[in-house]
Image (cartoon, rainbow, N blue to C red):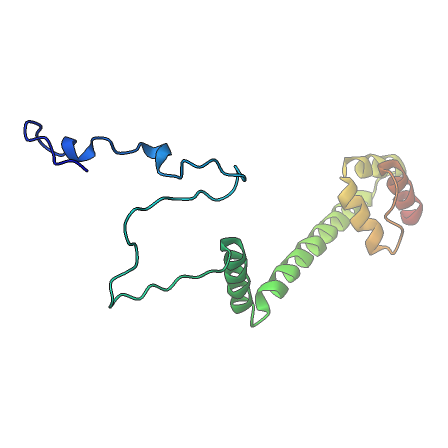
Length: 155
């Protein structure tokens, strides 16, 4: 590099003729355009004698997945997290089934079969299936079929 021009001031003489962001790589056209870029360095890049550099050669994706797996294993060692979630889901299903049973039973008292049919139509397919399951009946089919099956079972 030439000596800086004394007439210029500041850092601009040192920055003159430096490559732009896109020119740091080799000027040789790569046979693999999407591959890793090759960087050119004209000076020795080895670390000083006392400095030790440790690098992890493992792929970043594999390292990330391994760390996530280790984190997941350590958090679920007691096994209570998974079972708690399942129990909560089961509890919600039971509660909704009980609630719909209580609603239907209270509506059926002192009402005719037409009212019961209308009540069944207001229920979601999920609730109808929960009712059928609680009575040990098949839960497959369209909403109308589920309602018919429930009507036959209740009376």
